[in-house]
Length: 283
View 1 (cartoon, rainbow, N blue to C red):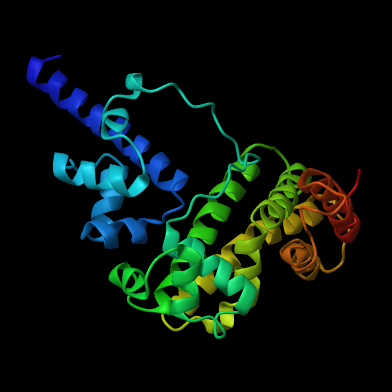
View 2: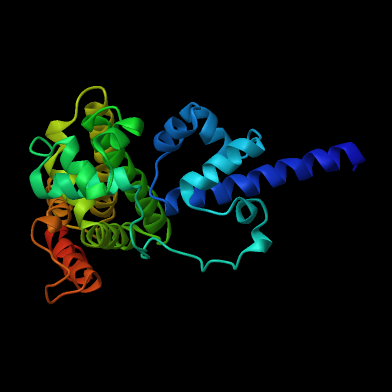
């Protein structure tokens, strides 16, 4: 291989590796692509290209991103400089890390409702001044959209990973139900907002996020329809049964509490059994 071609390939590999570390740091910080793009003054497409290793990032912007993520720039540049983190799966839920305004908004919206909460309520819970919240978030609507984008981004990623882990419609259905139940217990505050405040979204975000929610529903629909086609599920109403299963899981934040008797894992196991009964799966 010519030397110039080898060096070009190495540069591409370095960008891709850095992009993966930036994506992981962003997700650990509880931020969406839109959040980062807004904070760094770039387009969402540009930051997506950075995370996918398609474009380089300047040192200044890397430092700004590291500060935003609460990370050390040296660790982002050189993975050997940090202790390797254990590999996480869709079943792993580390403590939710949100920027202070988003954490304050989540707490206020859960406690008071979106329309009942004011920016002052958000600021008090975030430990900031009202001006401090407005500095980065021009309206309360922007905070709600960011929380729901974060929710759907994380849920989609976990559902895809859960679905890919198994073979056959029954096994994939089981994993999807387990994933949904785990998410709506471990991330019950986000799940609560997702269920209760869709009506508060303004267009075009309402349609966009509603479409994202339907995409999750369609994952479950597909497995039940395929299960019925293969004869391993016997419900006469596959779409309706799939909808009932998803609704069962998304209702968990309405009643489940970490102070109750059942862990998220125990609830997920119970809900898998309920779901298999609903679709009349062959066991």
